[in-house]
Amino acid sequence: AQSVTQPDIHITVSEGASLELRCNYSYGATPYLFWYVQSPGQGLQLLLKYFSGDTLVQGIKGFEAEFKRSQSSFNLRKPSVHWSDAAEYFCAVAGGGADGLTFGKGTHLIIQP
Amino acid sequence: DGGITQSPKYLFRKEGQNVTLSCEQNLNHDAMYWYRQDPGQGLRLIYYSQIVNDFQKGDIAEGYSVSREKKESFPLTVTSAQKNPTAFYLCASRDRALVGPQHFGDGTRLSIL
Image (cartoon, rainbow over all chains, first blue to last red; front, top):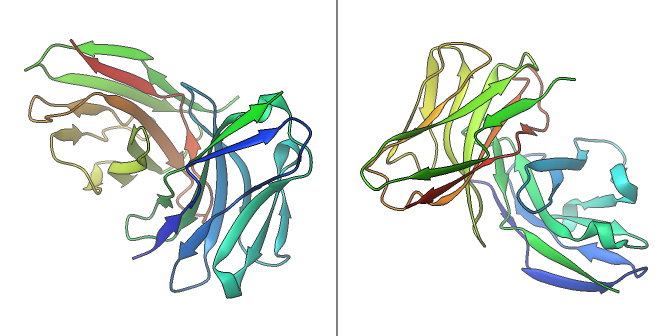
């Protein structure tokens, strides 16, 4: 069965600093990978996805992620964070038996002024 | 614009009562999903439906029931058998013909009085 690990429960970053959120997956075949963001009390919004091709994918709000098969990773990055980026971030992999997504437990991003 | 509507946003239940959470989508998606979200737990799949009049249990289906009489609607009933129903519930949908991301509603927060 596939799984997703987000090693960091909380991350604190100063406004304007760079950001990297880690995601490791376990899946037997070529994974379909996603990053979602969730603001408090809201649903999930898709930031970006990787299906195939270029391993560096661009998303909305200035985010990007890099797929590294050798490391089973799909880390999310942003060169300069804004206070509005404070939220919960979820990494997910598709292709499970439920025909749906398997999510990591999330990383809570705190932005310091 | 197409999307997923969940109602109500907040719901309160007395112990021993059943309550039904509404989920409606106008995206013309075949597949629909219900997730439960608890702090620090990520999203866990309750039920999913790939087509009208068909649905399957997810990872934590005990104490829940669903129906899928129309393509647009996938209501979730939290029964009195669910011992710890206080949580944030998210509905999602996906175009089953594609491997793609799921689209999420804004969630319903259920609390026990």
